[in-house]
Image (cartoon, rainbow, N blue to C red; front, side, top):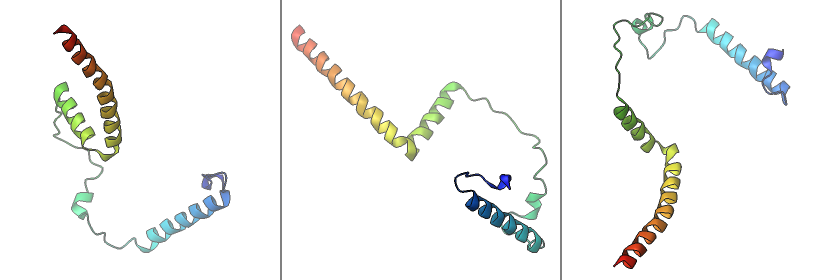
Length: 109
């Protein structure tokens, strides 16, 4: 029974869920064993455990790898808030720098 419990605060629920899942899997394997599957053709299933042969390894230079990494980061929605945060921080920091440069230019002339 201990193997059924994942959440120790609610062991009864875990035991019931695991038991139902186990029964469902057992039912499916017994009653659906002779049903043909839809989707992946059986010819493709035959070579599932066979190793790949004739594969080629490509070595990518660091510049191309960095370019691909940047592309993925810029086109991922989860990263967008961090990019916006860093951009706002840089704009605030650079605003003071630009003001200092302008002041130096005015003082020099």
